[in-house]
Length: 318
Image (cartoon, rainbow, N blue to C red; front, side, top):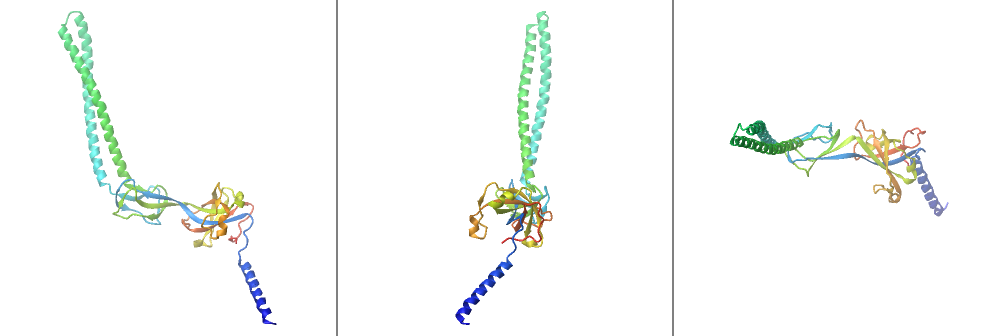
């Protein structure tokens, strides 16, 4: 056979063989009743910073370690605040003593006023009968007037003393709050994702101390085409697989579905797929054992038909 016939024939055979080999290596189509998506695992990150400034005296920050709610993360130097608290407490105590002294004096002059009131009534009656002189009645009236003035003066002093004690007590309370804030505790059960401060360094409100994440509240957000979004229901079961545990599937459920469509995100590989309208579907992940980590890429399968059994294995559709 002539070479000009053999060569094209061999090219056709090679092309056909390559095509059939490619087709045979493609994964099978996803079973009806299931949807596939992928994305990166995310967690709600909590940035920890100090509310007061101070150098780090104690630190339990260890990246990757798990902390219980209320455990100490960092303790800052509060020597100055502690000294100021002692001074403020002494001032409050002095003002409270002064207030007590004013109360005692007020009580004494209130008793004197009550006595003067009784004397005035009695001497007024005696004067009408001519038993006492006008001068004596004037003396009794003057005594009452002085007692009344003292009562009013001490009442005013008492109100001022109460205000001074209140201010001093609030100052003590604020200083105690400042000292309490020098000890920074975990606001929840969480894992330390990263730390940004070391022993001896100065912590300020502008400086990040650590980033925490709740490993029991991880999510995976996948984007699915608009055409299939109507099949997905909240709490629909799902399974997730990550490269680090390629033989294992993690249980998940549909937590929420975006109410507004968007163009396919930029992290989709093929440019022609980025022009599709998609909806974000968020899966809540079961991570009781703590194997899943934020940032891991993951594949997800959602079962929208409850009558279907989970296929084994789950395949990534081409």
